Length: 511
Image (cartoon, rainbow, N blue to C red; front, side, top):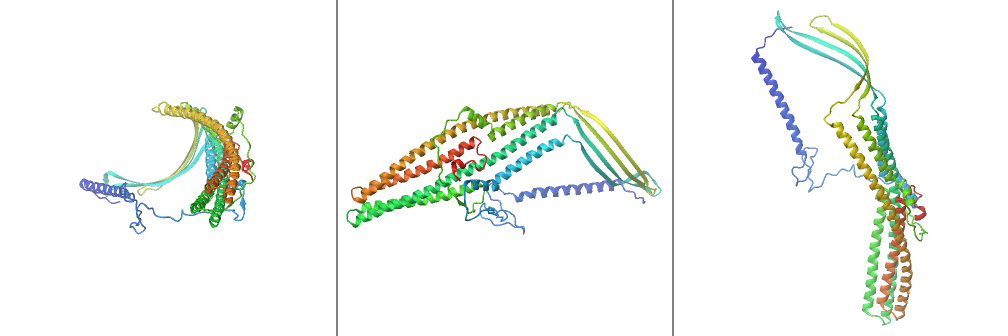
């Protein structure tokens, strides 16, 4: 060891230099943090321009964002056979397998189940093991130099393994309340998983019916175009015989043009209905799949008014009502857990520690020490004062329970109202279909008579075109009423909680 005297002024200068260097380092780090603002938009009205890899900026006009082809991947639905025409149950099966909503609901149910398992784990002791080791060098200045020695260096190194146990033995039922709340939440998540499948079944059923109605409108529009051309042919024939007029021929041509325009519109609506069906199934919009139209879809004459017993039975199996009820039970358990915060907790702890330490000072021989310790402790904690935190948590739990109870009442009333409205909607749709069917029969007779009269020279073109338009309107009304009846029937089954499998819509929708 060497003795070296350092003057107080030199030590002060060194301390000042170290302090200045530390201040400069802090300023540099602060500048680096503020420089991150350069990557954000420079003003509320200017677009964000990302930096390129070379350090410059990418030229992107306007508010366009840089493209990333990694996200632009359209995955075709597996297992689709191009030449096969799929029925409604098969479409529902594809939807339940491929719709992302089912996977989301499944993961949420698994997360809720794991949350309940984590609460169960708190009943068991927590055991941890740790190893602490290190080396420490200490330099102490001597108050009086000994010869040329004015400081002493000492080294200390060692390893200390430890095993600790912590176990909450008794907490006045707080963990039990938390476990009950977690279990109720898991039940609600499981119910909502089944509810997601019911919603998919209903959505596919509804869009399937609307797709069928769109195809019917296409066929009706095509038939209307054929009827308009028959009138056009009759007008041209009368012109050749010298019995017609140019006005009549112009009217016939106009009727053909309008029918062609209606057909184009119906075809566009058909494409939209097809995409709506794919969206309900949750498959890629570029998927090509043939849809088998249901044939012989019978409709009942009427539907009975829902009775109180029917509504009560439906509420007992409605997923939204059951999930809300589980949420209420969970919130009530939360009140008990918050109340337990005011009570003591009894715990058990144990520890086992070993040590191996070596100490050396200057040129002295190394001193080795080995030691170990073990102990078991039993204690209790009693909260005395926390600034009202526990009271606020209890009030929050009580408020959450009151809100959950009100939510359950609202969901239950809404569900009952949906059942009544659904039955009324189905009755109205069936009545409209019956009336539209009679209207189609009458309009068809009128059209045939008007066309025959005009062809024979005793009728007018105006009457024939009017009859053609009336027949088109009647047929479209019949197709719309039929689709509305199918949708209303599916909706009633859905609000009753009966649309629970891919076979459920079959009695109404065909195979």
